[in-house]
Length: 117
Image (cartoon, rainbow, N blue to C red; front, side):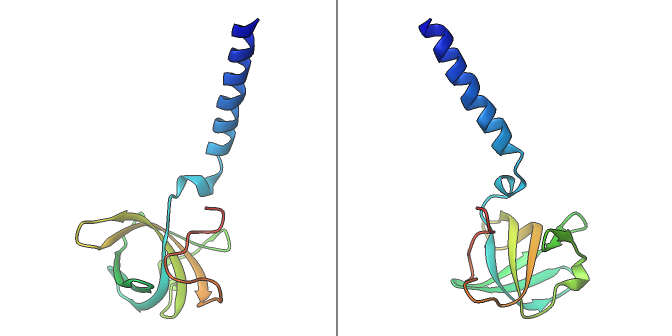
């Protein structure tokens, strides 16, 4: 009987993990947030609480605003963004996804995680 109960408990834990793994925000990790101070063809520069961060973008970088896809051209100087990607030893951030919040919003200091993190 104890073995059956332990098996059921393990199954319930596993089922909960699988269900939560499908929530998109859990796959993104921790974001680097800040205000866009410059935009170029190769990327952008963010002003964060800890200083400026260079962000490199590629053809595979995804852009989103209010859970809707947008284009790279819609990211403007002064926009507050959250960047998910890989930080290199040089401090440069290679973006996988950029969430655009628009102009600096109160309560969105640099380095904050994407809502739901």
